[in-house]
Amino acid sequence: MVKKLLKGNEAFAEAAIRAGCEGFFGYPITPSTEFLEHMAKRMPELGRGFVQAESEVAAINMVYGAACTGKRAMTASSSPGISLMMEGISYIAGTEVPAVIVNVMRGGPGLGNIAPSQGDYNQMVKGGGHGDYFPIVLAPASVQEAIDYITLAFDLADKYRSLVFVIVDGNLGQMMEPAELPPMRDLDFITPEWAVDGETEGRERRFLSSIYIDPKDEEVTNIRLLRRKLEIEKNEILYHTEEIDDAEIVIVAFGTAGRVASTAVRQARQEGIKVGLFRPITLSPFPYKEIEKLADQAKSMLVAEMNTGMMLDDVSLSVKGKIPIEFYGRMGGITPFPDEILDEIRRINNSPPTDTDFNAREAWLDRLELIIEGEN
Amino acid sequence: MTETSIIISGFGGQGTLFAGQLLAYAAMDYGKEVTWIPSYGPEMRGGTARCIVIISDEKIGSPVARNPFAVIAMNVPSVNMYEPLVAPGGYMIINESLVDQKIERTDIQPIYIPGNDIAKELGNIRITNMVMIGALLELVQVLPVDELKKALDSHIPERHRGTLPINFEAIERGAKFVQEVLAEKV
Image (cartoon, rainbow over all chains, first blue to last red; front, side, top):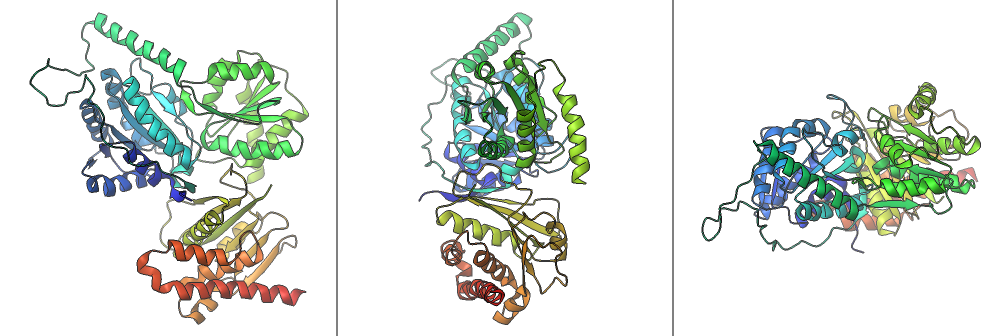
């Protein structure tokens, strides 16, 4: 058996190394610190670049610089650290250089806490930095998936000269699970034709920047970025389903919330409830069409998240009012237990919602307050 | 569902996280699905340290469980925290050396085991955690007790290899204690 019991953050870092990451620049923050620690140990061993920067702002600009050379570069941080990086992230997007950023999300806003959360959905999926740009966002739900999708993240970043975020919550960063790492990739990448690699003879000067002083030039860039986004939407959508074929209730949940929902779905199936799970893996590009198709088949949906219902908005856009959507979320760094989702499934099964135009968030908040009261 | 959730809870330094990891290694090596999650709050030495291990025959969804099937409570706060939460029909393995109280619930089975005393008798108080998980697996037969020894043998860092015999003994003593308690009840 080649599977080993691997700790999330360490496995993610090793996966990045094996995918050919040649430069890591970061600043420690719980619950992602073990990622940086693993890099600190391994990268110098391999003769690759590692810098613990003086701040997140410095770290992301080091990633920017390294990415401009055409080498695979990355950082990993956690929510407040990612916020600090936003200016550099926008510059990376504007310069169209590939970079991979891992966000091990924690409770917020503000300093918040170090407990697991999915509260950065909007920041990650909708951009976060200034200007028109469209990062690819991957949301794995297990240590193995995180290993696989960090590898994919580098390939997608190179393919589309794009920013790729891999977002997990503190649970995945901290947990151990049996998983298998891929073999070490040879560093035989061909230097891209745009890279500033120090070569001075035999070719034209190369220049990388996010400055387009003439609005006409900026608009050309905006169009190019948008065309690329549309191409990514066509090619790269990923998702996972369970028990979906005859499902009358479809749960949509990503990452850890998706795992928790998976347990609830299995329990509900044992009670004879026709419920299935749709777990988006690419949050950007979002699987709008796939969810719309499910809306033609199912009677209702339940979106479950560890935030205030950020993905709920994207699911609503997908469903186009065809069927009612309910919401259940926990916030603040609290991970829902499977029985909370199971209770929601039972409730929806017992009295199926019919109104497609009601405020799912408001109804959920009323229920949640009673649940919290019961817990205390 | 063939899924067993186990919480190991105690003071920092009592080896709860390592005991959980060993259980996870044993489960993996035995061909089971397994997850291990520590509490990673801003705790200091002497604060609480706990982890949850889920062992299953199927792919594991939720890595957390509200009502664990079994709890190893290494100290008083752990007993107080988890007595209300253990699933009905579940188990509590309580470190009697540090816990001078009985649980009130009658729908779960407690085992009071003098973990620290047994470990001291064997010559090292730091192997209390091994006594406790030996007891756990004898009680909750999710894996054979011997799998713990195999896992320890396979995964122990080289520098600690010398401690294998005493760790094995601790696991066996924990298991034997439970055998005797169960035999008395019959």
